[in-house]
Figure 1 (cartoon, rainbow over the protein chains, first blue to last red):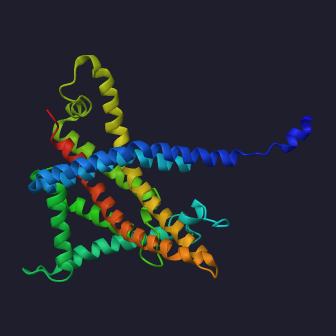
Figure 2: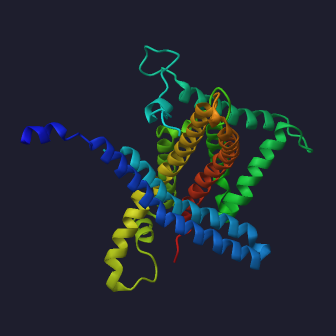
Figure 3: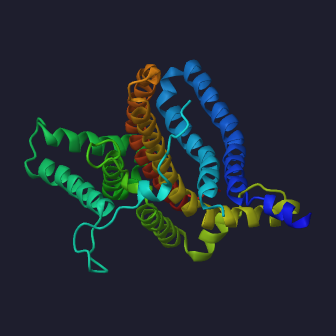
Amino acid sequence: MLHVLAAAAVDNNAGLQTIGRGIVYGAAAIGPGIGIGLVVGNAITAMARQPESAGTVRTTMFLGIAFTEALALFGFVLAFILK
Amino acid sequence: MLLGLDVPPLDELTNWPPFAFKNSDWLSLNKVGLIYLLAMACTLAIFIIGGSKKKLVPHGIQNVAEVGVEFVRDQVVMQTIGSDGLVFLPYLTALFFFIFFSNIFEIIPYFQMPANARIAMPLVLALVTYAIFNVVGIAKQGPLKYVKNAIVPPGVPKAILPLVVVIELVSYFLVRPFSLMVRLFANMLAGHLILATFSVICTAVFKKSILVIILPFSFGLLFALTGFEILVSFLQAFIFTILTAVYIGGSMHPEH
């Protein structure tokens, strides 16, 4: 009985690894997705209210996007180096 | 439907065997190295040719050089450091153009590899930025005052100060260079992978069957993403430059 079970058991480590990578990147993208939405949305509000300060707002918006996006990119890199 | 689509593994997409000086440890040159040399040559050419004949009314390549310098001066240096940061204008302009040129080879036919999708050059550039903002901070404020200004933010209640100091220490001296490196590297690698994936899909559906009706959509998306990658190449060069300027500015003018 046991040796039949042992023969039927497959090595599914590779598949589990792939699923893990998917979860790592998917979970890492949730927060930055919301964050970038907030940053850009508020920047658009600011630009619409004060079009004369659009230049400053745009620079600050890119900075905010860069900081927020870094977390998603950590997840992206981690998904590749995960063993 | 698209079973049997084999996307090449990551090693195949980013590893390039050397094609010149193959037996040498130090001189062996592969595609990534060649792209960096070309990017350096382009950056040098713009400023040497553009600066050799300074005419009052700029013409040709002098226009490019002047617009580039003006862009970095007005959008990066003046917005983040102020007029006393103009000493860093040559470095920041060269940094911007070098990163932009090594990124833009992502969409140039026969190269089609963003050189910054290998982590070596982003690592070096991030370390240079790290060295610059630390040296500037120590020179401007003195070592003890610089570290104190860096890790003790003003106006924090005494009770949570130890926690804040630890967080600021890690984020200032470890996360800053690391995120600078990873941001450039991962953005370019992701763009390269996306373009490669859509190219593979396009070639897979390009055959005599009903599947060919998908081809316009995947090709259109490939076309649009190529345009998007031009934007990303520019934006990543801009973000790397502006973050370098922000870090230098933070070292020059600490918050009180």
